[in-house]
Image (cartoon, rainbow over all chains, first blue to last red; front, top):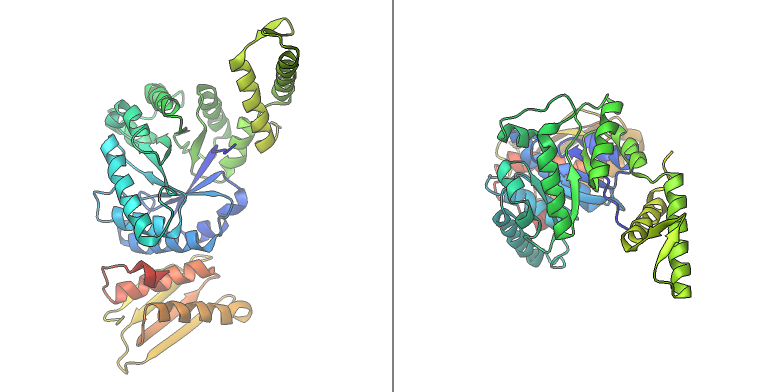
Length: 292
Length: 98
């Protein structure tokens, strides 16, 4: 089971952060060549990300590179660097339509051919940052076989909506979260929630994590390593959930052995979705442990 | 690759390095490296710098490096960035940069 709970943003130009962030064991690291890098440092950051990808410092952690949009002077150069260096995933910012992904897909395939990388081995992730992106989420999510996920990016989205980030109850993101999540599920790919920018507000962060976990998001983009453990723990199943899931699986196996069609546990009927959920809980517990 | 103008890349932050390049009047290659970890890793740092310059076919210029404990990947990236800026090179040859 591939866990993508945490996607830690690392500015591509910051050598110190790039050298140490692997110790925090995020599920994915996202080397940022876009907003976190000033215009005059784009070239240097691109080379930094190129070489850190080739160095295998992040072996065992999924590597994502956020390139600049392809309609900027930097986007294609970023893409060349990331694909040639072996990035696992390319994150495209400001994805507004399926054609953005199709154009990216074609460029990735060209670069894979040119550098001898296995065709199709570079995966794609679309960041949705506008009303158009939310409206087109389903076609974006299904635009390429390379797609592994879509992420909602809150700051640009609320600006596009002529709204603003509110009192942390965040009703302004509710529709977009649900739309992105439904698109991801319909496409069979992962969904990532927005960053939580107040890194000193653990209670607010955990409240937001609880909301998105209940909605069904796979994980969240993060801007600080201290949020990783909080997030992973919140996503881990409880001892009670694991215990119940084991009993569900045992009951299902017993029913199958005995040829019984209807399964009951503690007086409640157990059907296929509940068995499926129990399997997921056990897989998650095996991968991440239980909640502390 | 010819260094035709002064250029700088990197920072003096921990785990980074500052690379300054300038043209050489004598048409020789002169490299100066100082590092917080010179005693322990000086030979390795110099080897990475030499390899990187060789990869870019830099045969003359003055290269001044102030290292703050950077790992090999950062040394390669900053030296390449400084040289490409100093050579006013717009095209990237990824084979050469690998």
